[in-house]
Length: 217
Image (cartoon, rainbow, N blue to C red):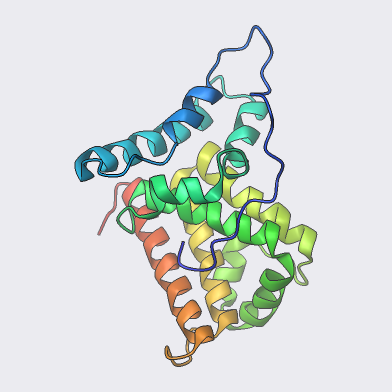
């Protein structure tokens, strides 16, 4: 993620949360998302990133994916750790599916762990990014609970609904935050640097959305 890398604040369950008759799917995914060992071949690491990202979407979009399965995917960063997801996906090429999923989970974590900061950025940025704000569907006066719910909804839209639409919405949200952080200002300040990184994230998410819809140009 091209902004702060907040840690997920949800509790990590001690068990896998599944009944005795349910398929043991979540532990397998959790193991697959473990950070790669040092010295792993870059091609193998890329293949692992792409495979696990595709598996998340496959599970969320499966015909038999129930609400519990979808919500487990929404809370994936809480369960396996945001830093662990960064090791698996965050380094991937901007615009790729792994990098796009990482950005969505990082935006969600930012909304949940630092809602007061996100609230301030949204209120400052929305008037300067009205089109993006309308794509996101922001309330006129968003509160912290609204933003926590939005973080979940951004991930949910990608992992269980229409992928291009979900990625476009996440990109629009990053653009609103960038406007609030002062992306039009100089890059030689902390505020300006973060704003420009958020703009880069928005651009990469939009590119990923075009790729997902079959229009990479």
